[in-house]
Length: 187
Image 1 (tube, helix red, strand yellow):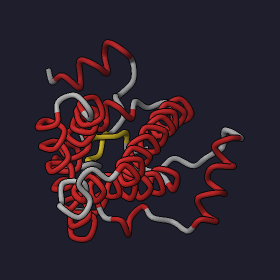
Image 2 (cartoon, one colour):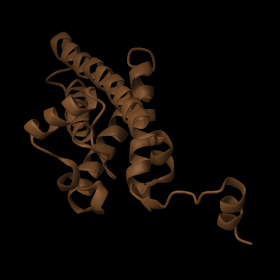
Image 3 (cartoon, helix red, strand yellow):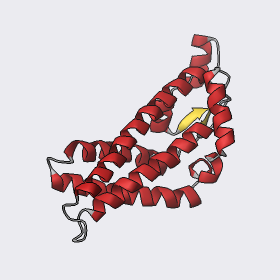
């Protein structure tokens, strides 16, 4: 007797069909970026070598994600989840009314969040690198811009987590688990 048959007999229903959504590279990117950003944020003023190493690694990850967003599999591609601002606002309105459609990949708000996060993190990387050059060494103004990018990223992360929780609740699925396993319910 297979495990599926045991589940059917024990629970009286078949488990939902699962589909592959996020490939391993997207998932490794996601969790690596989240971890390294927290490391960089926590070590900013205290452990400069760790902060800089995390920053360069983040820059490499972002470059990879942009390339993967152009050539990767279906759900990794920007063309799969980027929508117009109007479509994104309609989706957000529908979320507020608890009638948002479910997406197998990223929903329009998630797609917009990815772009916003990539822009903010790229800004942090560029300004961080600039502060290591002779031209901008010790620039307090540039340091403030760098910190502003980082703080805005923290705000976006908070909205991202909130969005994941709302979508998980509204569609009765564990999106955090899906970002670990790469699989979501087919319907």
